[in-house]
Image 1 (cartoon, one colour):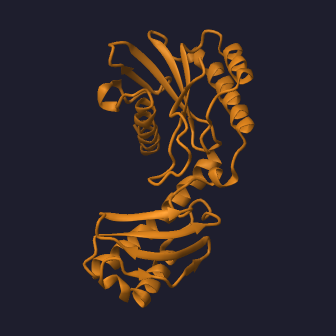
Image 2 (spheres, one colour):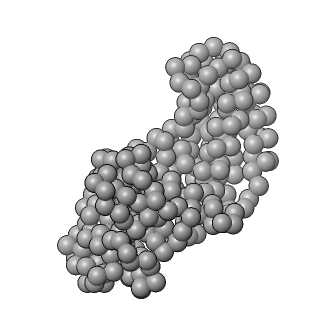
Image 3 (cartoon, rainbow, N blue to C red):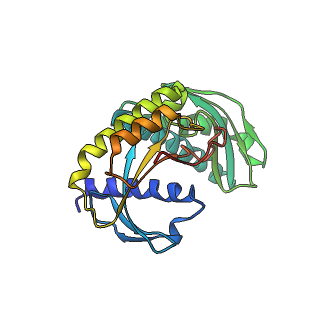
Length: 260
């Protein structure tokens, strides 16, 4: 397996665990029988002993995935520099308030951003000498602003609050449920068209991953379209409302919705 395929498989595996959690299970309750494979992405055995071929597909377009990745990199850079400032003063953790208006373009180097944030923190980090000390000087950058940093030794690591937490751009655009359903139908149509080439010795399960704001239910119209498109291609089709960050503030939508 090449580096690109390995990265794609790792990404799919990170989505599989939360999806299975939506069934009241954890990945440890399942056995991944075959990992290094495609069409379908995984061969797994569920806790009842039934074997499934699982195909995973994101509802959002690839370019939106790139934007999510770049915002995650930006947020990671913030965490790293804040943690370095804390360590200079013996701190264990902090809460950072801020927001990102936009995201870096794909492939953009963030070294300059990190150096600027580091210099800002060194200039204003005197309050971090004590627990609950707060840097209130704002750090404005190309894509948004870090409003303040509060040392909090009750936690390990850096927590980001606001839109500087790795939330995907789709969440800021508040994608309409009708648009999410339209994309669901498109993904099902695409996967059904390809399903004739899948190994069919076991039941096939299509897991659609939704990283936009959560969707509470699937309309009857969408279900009927999915059923009509599917025919007998997949034995089960589900939508997983996958949380998009460590501080996901969305309402607690159902983690997994059954479409078929």
